[in-house]
Length: 177
Image 1 (tube, rainbow, N blue to C red):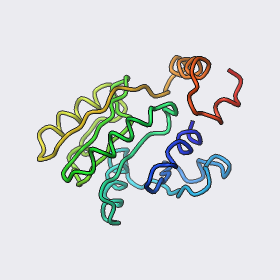
Image 2 (image 1 turned 45 degrees about the vertical axis):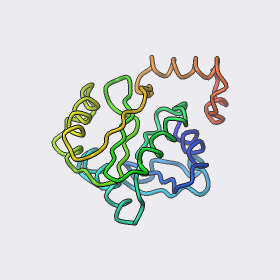
Image 3 (image 1 turned 120 degrees about the vertical axis):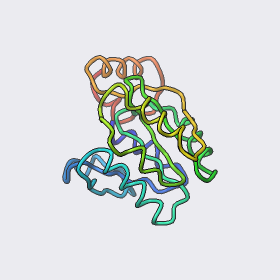
Image 4 (image 1 turned 60 degrees about the vertical axis):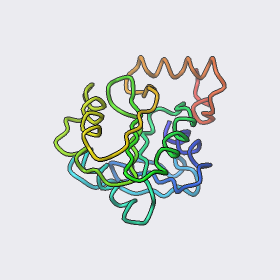
């Protein structure tokens, strides 16, 4: 899933970076050529995401988008929509996942309030993040819902999608369906 997601994102006119929670988590063949690999730093998911967005903005990028790698069939039109929205200053983009989290968060300015004192990996993360975002001095764009693969049932759904569509997932398609 990671390889296919990264491969699908590479054509975008921006730098694609893989931030891993554990050093050595990806094997060299898992990461497509040209992808920068770094180790996440921070005590929890919120601190790690905040750090990546702050770092990207401090490096001079107009916006930063974080996308998980556990939804390899995410429609690229959703990423296009996020990038278009982030052309405006003071913008937050959220892509809600069906399990209550989000598959994408993007910002054209830093909003640390969205990451602090959050209970991660619950079915209320998206709702709480969206509620916080709506109370900030920011334009908020909510993308369409999509699913991620966190369970055997969701893996079955992904495999069925691969069998019944032409989703671009060459690495996953080499697996026995």
